[in-house]
Length: 177
Image (cartoon, rainbow, N blue to C red; front, top):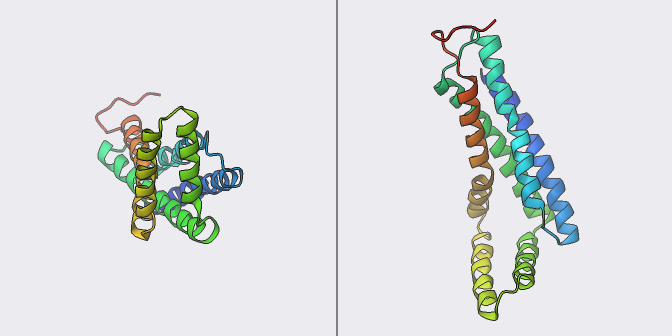
């Protein structure tokens, strides 16, 4: 089981990190973050499909075709934690070494977007205050880590729950031929 968790977690982490690095560099160069969020969450769902693969592999090859919801969720949780940790580490390296002014560009983009949506001067001032608060929080490496985990971990947990629910199979269930 540990081998499955490690392999699936690392594959998932590498896939989601590769998408993240490529989309960040693309958006960073063009200073346009539109569509990045949808693409990013789609990549997370794609990479977390390894949770389903890992649980199914464990159930079918190593546990005689049976797995409880709890065991399946536990496998998914550990795959999620490994993949998310890879994602966080890659983001820390990318952020601190290659895109240290990412937050400046992101805040500028969000302000332009609010302006284009017709925000009043008061609303723009409030938006600037809010975004500068996030920018200030992002100066702490601990906050960068927490924000990054908060970005990726919930998706993995949701996929873990869904995979566990779909793949659970106990000895009392009739076998379909």
